[in-house]
Image (tube, rainbow, N blue to C red):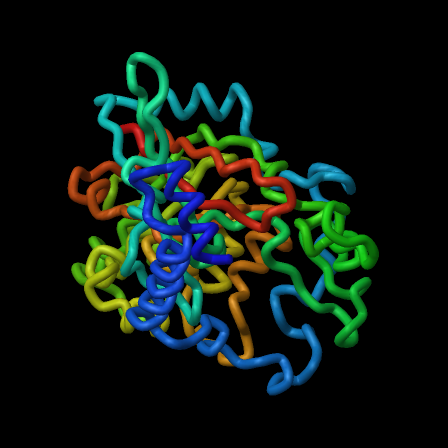
Length: 373
């Protein structure tokens, strides 16, 4: 049966490899990806809930955070700031017209956690053709991957929530704007139905507005004169010192702007020492996250895989900055971006442009952000 299928496929596409060989190659590549990455999950770096005290008292999530400032039905969070005002302000930041790509190349060998994979294959050489008198030929690709923690990663509002009650009670699993686990997932249905297994019913990344706003870089690595280390917290004092060093003030952090911090982690370790890159990271802590959230920023970004300090100085907290940004304030997160070229050119204010892929029900998106100086 397999032989007949391969012969039929080869007859239809003379230069294509057999389907069986293609599948075997993809499986081997998937295994190889696991071999070159760190065999761990990012949650291995934090304390599990079973080991904590079982409550959220004394944490950034202790008090109610909904309804949103934009109304009880809002699903787009801080991208509500996007509009003519932020667009014109972004344009005003452009002085030279130089464009910087902030995204990482999606490629084999990227730092990945656990068994996540990035497998891209071009079926056939070429994939199709030739057709017409003009003998057109073409290539397509097949891609097998995940979104979360794969390359440059944009977090949507359905990505992070907080358990506020007993385990298993979905009504007490709360996300941005009071959306609960029962709101996100329909318990019935099957293939073809709109259940949580086939995408989130609310807070999907398709709701996010495109970003066209002011960008502000905090060059923390430049301030310190070195790459920061894992577990090293970026404080409010550090951010203020960056502004002073860069000839800026807090007034430069405007409502709706994108803020990002350079730690040196990415430029020194990305695809150079993946094990160390994944072992933890420097980043902002709880107080800096609250300070930025109070200024009305739209997205927080960094040159590391979670933007926040890991492990947290408080061992009882697991990714609290994600909850402060996404869950409490609807502020999106952009991870694993490049910032060294902006710092080298002393570009600290710029126009930031990015549009997440509008994948219905997805918790996030790959990203190709740019800065225009």
